[in-house]
Length: 114
Image (tube, rainbow, N blue to C red; front, side, top):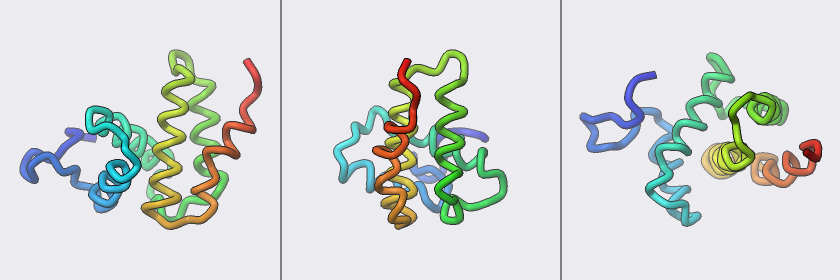
């Protein structure tokens, strides 16, 4: 996947969605120190989608990604929460998919109690 940040572009990631995603994170008060992790989750979701753009994601895509992530060894609830926050912002705000804005609540309700 290369570097997290494009060195030739003064720290701005090279994906076309990255700049609006970064602005959305700032508007929501997400700390700049965690931007790298939000980008990692967004990129992992992009890899999960294979060759499809996140603009073409269906409701099942983030749910499948997050369910797989939540059941992965070594993944903490905090990491799942951050990945969920990432996808809520990426899909709901950056992509403008209305269902994406409610994803955080819907996914939290669907997780089995531990």
